[in-house]
Amino acid sequence: MRPAHRTADPYLDTDVIDDRAPRANQSIVFATALAGVLFGWPLAWALMAVQLLVGLLFGRRYCLPCLAYFELIQPRIGEGRLEDSRPPRLANQMGFAFLSAAAASWWLGAETLATVLGAIVAALALLAAGTGFCTGCELYKLGARLRGISARHHDHIDPADLAGFPGLDRTIVQFTHPICSDCREWDQRLEAEGRPWVRIDVRESPGLAEKYGIAVVPTIFAVDREGAVIEQLA
Image (cartoon, rainbow, N blue to C red; front, side, top):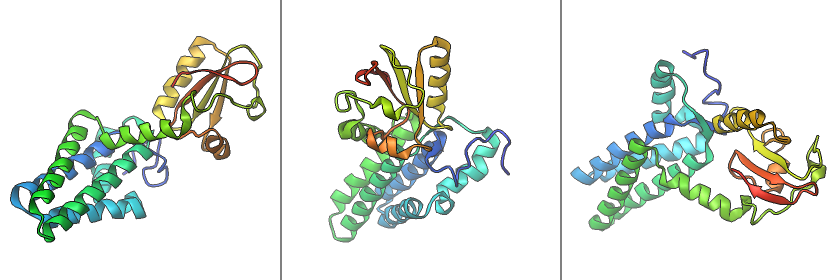
């Protein structure tokens, strides 16, 4: 069943994700990691690690927690906010690494280390599921800033790259994605404010996104008539 109000196909539009899907996934990771800690079941860690790896390599169609959310839960509660899928992907990579290390440590005789690693995964997964704060996601965003999406690193945008650039003292340049909820909110805000505004769709212009180091959307700059970055708004 595919509800009419679903704006992103969960199996095709993989550059975005319903923000409730990672929380549902983290609930399952928490339960599995905790079971391994409480009952000394390294196989639980190993199986969860394998499932995370399968989802990372082959996509959401082969991820059992993803299927449970998109086929059983989302059709009943509706689509949530759409967000960039890369931060939660890093969180899954971290979960795979920690759970694999926990299982391997147990089988190699380092049971205390294995329990600590499993407990770390359980704690972080519970935090993400319960509050929405995703440690792996925040690390991704921090890494993105360090790779250069801030105005401190990219201090100029070439006006020749901006179709319709008005050449004013202050123009907003927004790197966006057509089905990103935060991007749509910024669209409405900037339109309401009536500012001079240029939108760059990263799906249509991946070369520009790569050129300017755009690792998270929305990324929004204010630039002057020469393209020099005055301020980073988002």
